Image 1 (cartoon, helix red, strand yellow):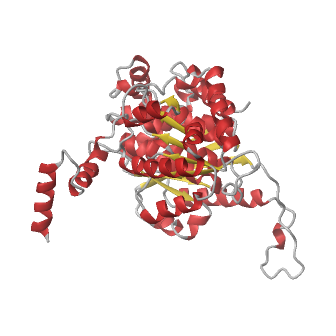
Image 2 (cartoon, helix red, strand yellow; image 1 turned 120 degrees about the horizontal axis):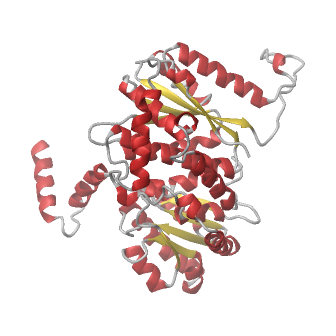
Image 3 (cartoon, one colour; image 1 turned 60 degrees about the vertical axis):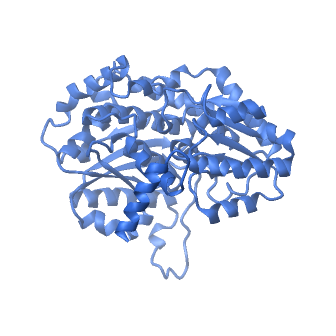
Length: 451
């Protein structure tokens, strides 16, 4: 099998000669800190060798549970937020038929995602859509008290029990949660739900290759063994013993930090394959939550090309030069479609007749990359031989290990997220949650004063 490839030549040319190579000692130190567990946040390094620790028996257990949900359900709702849903959604949308996935098929239920917002209309429409349907729930939460997910699960649990009956609900509600503690664990044990463990040492944004991601992906009918196999092979490719010049994760971490130090503060993740939209969303959380702290960090953004070239293209081409691009390119599409000829040729496109649509897309990609480089935008390219489970597994692990290295070079703890607690404290105070009485008085006084 081939591997994904990294090309940094159109980015390194914006730096001084030898600038990327100069990061080798820092990269090696970061890799050593990860391997030896001396990295900041070393209690969350369980993802590092997770792929090669996954056993066939473990995957069989996940597939067996997925088979029950597939048999009994027309739809399965994945209740989770952030890393508890983005990885699964990224893989499922990348592999699904763009126009049929919501309909479901004879052997796969419709996979829906909820618990990632507090939109009343969204939740009403979800519960309305599920009326009269046989549906299951995968409740993903370490604590079981995350507001968005807990609120959604409470609604879905009640509806599932009412529509399916309590005994059947116990068969089609699955908990992915902490091994011993938390509201979700207590609920699962009390109700007798099948459950899977989120390892204590794996943070949400690094959890795609745990049951957090694997169970929903298996429910959608995709090959989780191939996904894990790709990650396992990439774990070896990006290992600490791989020479710096041959290690794509090391090279990516080095070039990113080199560009950051040169004033490139925004990284735009670009695809020319619309199925990769949610892979970019997963990547944004992975890097934004890992590196954005201590008043540091590259801001992660994303664009879907060629679509967004008609909205963001002007700014990217001619705007402030604080950006660089990372392009994910799929070498060979899974389907074949030829451009037709037209007698009248009113659109003037007969010169493309007989060409594959992907050839047109590839020339759009190459033309865009050349134009942006000429416009002063450093360009990194990651190429996937094909869009399938195996190569998505490679991409996932590549970005994870590169993130760990990059965050260590930046000098932050890549595995915590203290900044996300501020809004929660304010929200609970405004809602008069028990235990927040003093915070509630203070914030309400502040708002009265500002009014």
